[in-house]
Length: 86
Image (cartoon, rainbow, N blue to C red; front, side):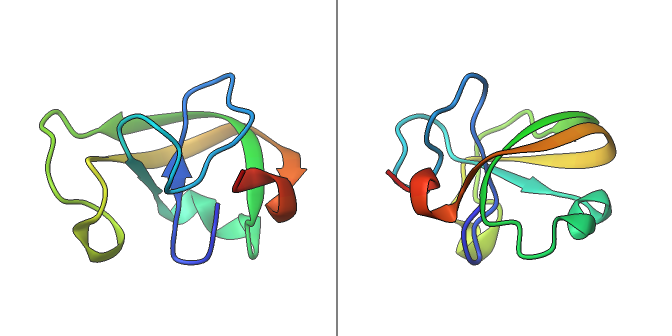
């Protein structure tokens, strides 16, 4: 995750930023608050819902889809912010 960016990249992601190729998926949900600043790449297993239609979601509507996380099952930091934006 980056400042004002909460992009979801399907596994196995070695980088995940706004510039990463593929659909831009905004990750949201009250259950994500425990991440603190949340900068870096996380491996996360969760229960949630994804939008069906491509549209304008997330920060300034710059994302193609949104996933709303209802419950986090597992969460582990894979890398810090300095390696996530490559």
